[in-house]
Image (cartoon, helix red, strand yellow):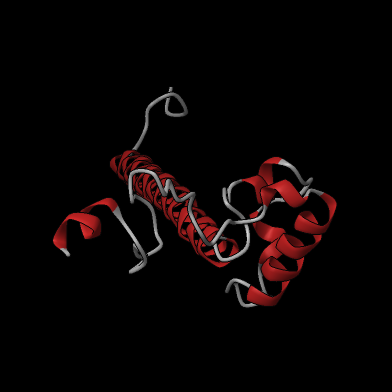
Length: 139
């Protein structure tokens, strides 16, 4: 019956193997958790970066389009279509696409002057120094 009994050396080796496996499993678990955290931070930062890039594109298109978001809404483009290889916004591509959109749909052009209601002297133009009702009573 010597074969069924285990020696203290065999039990120590089995215990050592078990400890190594547990340590390895714990270490692997820790690395998996770190990986998931890093992936989630990367996704959040990527989303934030795309938002900044979109705002830069809107800013570039705002010189031409009255509603800069029309650049994406009315064309089949996305943020990546207006980026350089290094991730910066290609301002020339944005301006070119905005001008193309304006040539196709002139009503989207940014109107640099607002409507002026001359009867109320409101708007962007300065009131004229010509004849007025108040001027009639001043003389």
